[in-house]
Image 1 (cartoon, one colour):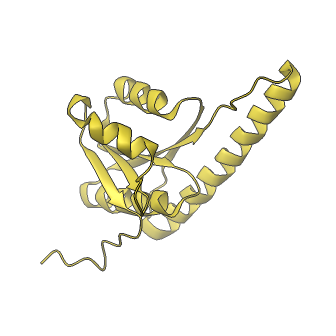
Image 2 (cartoon, rainbow, N blue to C red):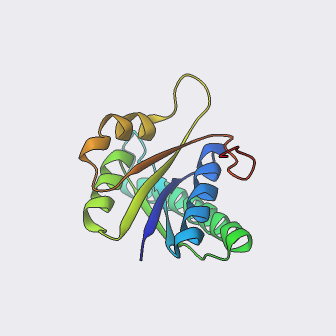
Length: 149
């Protein structure tokens, strides 16, 4: 089954990417996999404090991903798979793609303005080395309203 991988957070651009992925999955009878990334804190606290901070960030990302998944199910009828990972986003996405051969496309949302975001900048510069196509979806893109005539 063709799986569309979407990296998500609380941004509007990630919601646009998720809507795009859902429409593609519905069109081809595929699936959506949501990868929620949690940044590792830039400081080292005492072990227990560090673990608590990371667990709280992970819990927040899981709640966000499950909320997004519920919206996707309501809008498209597709129940996505969810993964939550802590660490460097570029490395995590690359490792995910290398170990999940079912991924048909990596779909990222681009922020409006001068900087589309660190993942978009990184993966667009390395698109030729990816094992699947890269789709970059603008923040306010609405395919239903787009003129593809």
